[in-house]
Image (cartoon, rainbow, N blue to C red; front, side):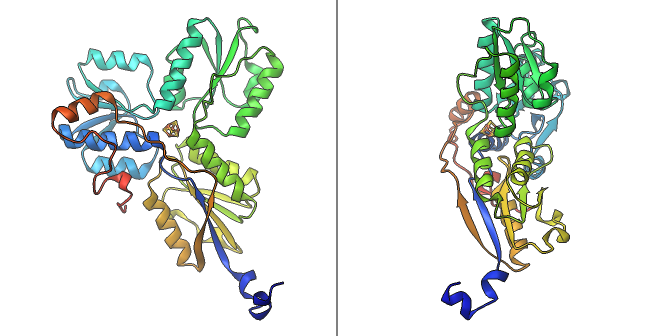
Length: 348
Ligand code: SF4
């Protein structure tokens, strides 16, 4: 025990700590998609239609709705000739065809890292491979990627699904994946697939994106020290849900997903000395700040950063939007305008 600890015998043992993961929150693909809708609203004026939730976050969607974005589930709900933005999760080619038949002006905010997986699917399908797509059934990204080559793609929804997988030629099989999965669980699925199909080929590069990997890495580094992990994110956000699972698997005694600080149940904090805080890739920082304020009001100390990686990736806005912004003499840069959601300045 140190001198300080002996002098203030009960202070260090009783101190309530907050470990704050870095990186957390917005990734480059979400940032780009949100700014694309904001800029489209500035340029064309409301309403701007958005097919599906632009990113899987309740706060982002309701804030954009207030500014005039109209979210629809299907392309056919968009009035003929209107502007529609495709979400960061990507769409199948058939959706582009539907938009064309309705004479819609489209802005494709598909994350470039999702587009990369689409291209891989097209390439392997062209070479007549059976493609085993590891992902969650019904997730928009999986529907979009599968739509690139439906006759060649089989969905594998986790390690337990491997037993059901059949292929035409076990010598010509490749696996690809959704971008927001648990790295560890995906590797387990691949291990089982390779047991079954020893000639299984790996994707040309990681499909689980840098943002998903980095956020999981930070959580793994702090989980063991945490009595509770609070992940800010929405229930339909795959990468956010994975962060809770990863935290508990790596030693956090408890873990919960919340959209807002006011969803935290006081009882979760009973006997909790160390709280870990992080957020999914679609979450504005203001929502994390509200959680930190909530914890500070209950006697938890200043957040201690746990830094797993530095991130500086920034994607350019979709080409079609950049072209129109330029023509209108407006900035086509990924700079956050004052008051932008991406500026993290808005309270709900
Ligand atoms: S989580 Fe990854 S794939 Fe998804 S939008 Fe962000 S960077 Fe792109």
